[in-house]
Image (tube, rainbow, N blue to C red; front, top):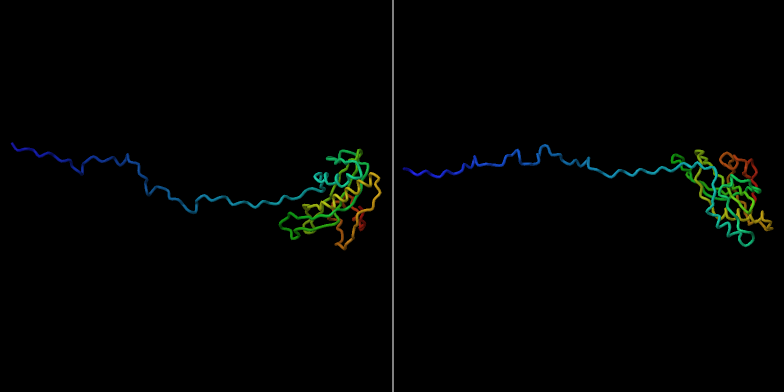
Length: 207
């Protein structure tokens, strides 16, 4: 009886893993990264300058310098944080110096300086005081300016006035009048409130 040859597994029919169960990425359906759509950091938006809205400015941070300037001659003064609620018993209008900046980017008049910035110094019972510095408007767009005060002029004016109110007889600090552009009443908030000595063609100056 002839021997049977052992059967060899059919390589073609050999069991292969079911292609349905093998997870392979589909090269056709797999999304390709789009270099144009790659996430980019959002551009930084340029910060817009805040429009100035203040008509007056106060400087309680300079009270210490004022106190030091009068300490040798009068009792320590007190800065009135909210003087508008009290009744002042003294008031004097003068001028300080400073620089203004226009925050309107469309305006051609970026900045200007002034030696005729209105300041009203007010005295209160018990050696109290405050000082209001009045804003100015831009001649280019009529917007209110952002103000950078000349601190020395402020301290000098306020200290001198407090000493005078305390009865100290003294000569005013030296002041040299220089030729400057005409004062614009329509751009001066002090003029509009009727407290600027430069207004209405006055042009006088006192410490």
